[in-house]
Length: 79
Image (cartoon, rainbow, N blue to C red; front, top):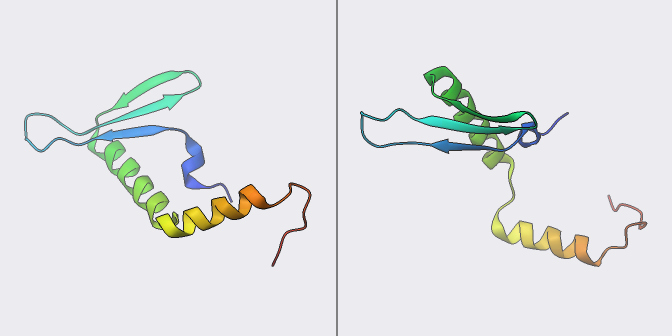
């Protein structure tokens, strides 16, 4: 299925004081949006957690990028 991170770019602004509410900035093809409702912010916090949970660590990322950089585009995929 669609990778959760493919839904678009977003930035979560979290503030430590009670005066400012957390905000999510979402970039879309139609413009930018700022979401301040708690339920919206929580949805994006969950999305961020899901994406970071599935991401590779630094060593695995380097290994993957190294393999991709040295593999011809028309090479058969190894299983």
